[in-house]
Length: 469
Image (cartoon, rainbow, N blue to C red):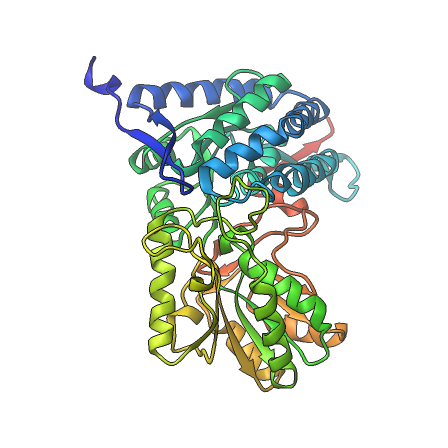
């Protein structure tokens, strides 16, 4: 076998449930990569000529395939990254199909030509053209919910797509391919690659790639930008987060407690827009904390294949160790733990199984209130009022979402205007509405998915200025 066709690496999914190997795949070779890019470019030239309604039909069939196979797909998610089987189906049956179908409903209008004002003797309009081939580099924490945000709009707009999934959930990429094959997608329009970081960099550097969408860490986002630095192509980067929540004195505490607990600990806290720090007004601080602690203790940590489990392991032992280190540093600096991992029998040091931790007496000198945790831990800080809350909420390198809990809509809107974030929630959290732009500021990255604006990154405008003969 010649050097260019030698296999570069083997990627393995090691389940956090029991350290078993779920699957392993060889990564692409240089020759594979060239062939994938050639197929994508050739197929895209034909796909862009397909009517939008026909593209919608194929994407709709793919969504229906996922719905028909939801149980199997959910079990596979659980095996790969450890989410409780009680929760895994929601990714397919709720948010995934909602986003895909909403973007499909927008496509005929958003992708239609935009006429300029009438001018005698001329026809003038702006047409959206596909950017070519879109490379999607998807994460493991919500393997379908994150990737659908770009894959479906890109295909609807007439692009071809190459999907590279995180090693932890590489089987999800293959399910995407199965769904589109069953839907009748023409060969080459959608392809999957298993690739190393060096392979991804080589793909980005190739002139046949027209746009890169990446969801992951800040460090990896810098690497994506670095790889694209010599080319004039767009990059969409959804990176880190340290999303804050503020509970005002007029909040519905029952609702605020339940939603904040869920926002902090769902998916073992491994959510891009999950709540990572909470600020509570003096007047309701004690009541909120008491309720939060009681609700946290209702979680069941254990084997995620058991339907009774409501909190599974983190994705791997090193991620859990990082969170444990944050907690230890906060306790050493004066924080108090009102709920500790030791209250949960399945929680074991040195493993991905980490029970939820609730910390108080925290402040911004502590890593737990500044660094992204991406795990089942929360710091709750007392504040004197709106001004202090907004100052602390903005005291972060990140800006994806922020939530306010209040009965006063006008006050919440005023606070929202001062928050440095991509989305402001009132009385909800940890949710993507496909009708709204999904975006962030600061080290959370740049770019927009979902809403009509979600088509901007995967299309380019072309102006037609026609003077009548």
